[in-house]
Image 1 (tube, rainbow, N blue to C red):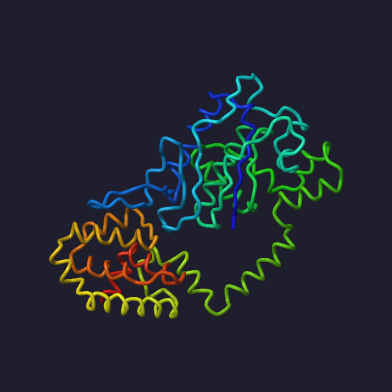
Image 2: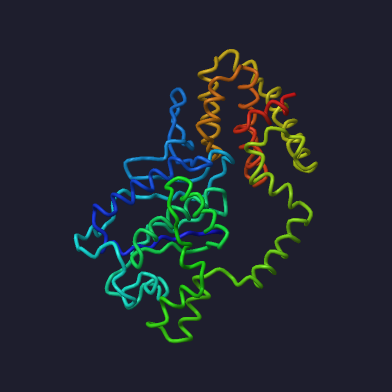
Length: 351
């Protein structure tokens, strides 16, 4: 599920040092491509609904939950402008020796350490595009606080290299790969403090699989990708929210959306939604759509809401019909969100 952790021994980090790191992280996140999304709120007439927004900075720091290009979202990561320890020691920004290495604390699952590392990240990216940005922010902290911070979790060498390239393009600096992507670096740092069995167990836990194992896993995933229904599932999760041309979708995916369009049109006719929208006007229609999305647990981006609130009455009636569709089945939920999110797809379905 691509969980990413960022562990930091906060007691070693001064407020000034973390302030400098935060400003660099802020610069990276603001300039990153694709642009990240954050959770937010929107007032649609009298209705208040949750949405995904482009403004990622809040009073709590940087909030990142997905990206604007794919409009896919996972769990929310928060990069705080403050750390809890805020030490004023002169050695706060460097390694205090192998025995005090944060990597040792993580390897031992925080046991036997005088200084307990805080977990600043620990959420799941679900392997979505914003995973690289989260790894990059963790890598920035790890490189800024060697021995005091470590980014870890489900991080491949490939993801580490993508993160390095992204950081270099924005900050103009060269960054080391996350230590956990290199078993030999991990071994060198942990060997003085761990016996052989514990060391090998730690390496297996912290580092990505060896290339042989990874190759077999890749072969298995490739076979799964060719299995019946794999492409439609992939498209529903990763493609349909922003796909500008439905003709490139798999036949099964197009069939699903054609069936959905019939269901929506039926609801529009049966419930006389076009007549209601005409009577209500666009403001009340948008409020009703907002209530429908909230009732269905469907959260849209601010870009989608911008388009919905400027839509003509015929389109609003179709959108209102979409919010009447039963979304308790996973595929229906993903498909309905795509109709609400993707205007190009919606125009095709409306005919």
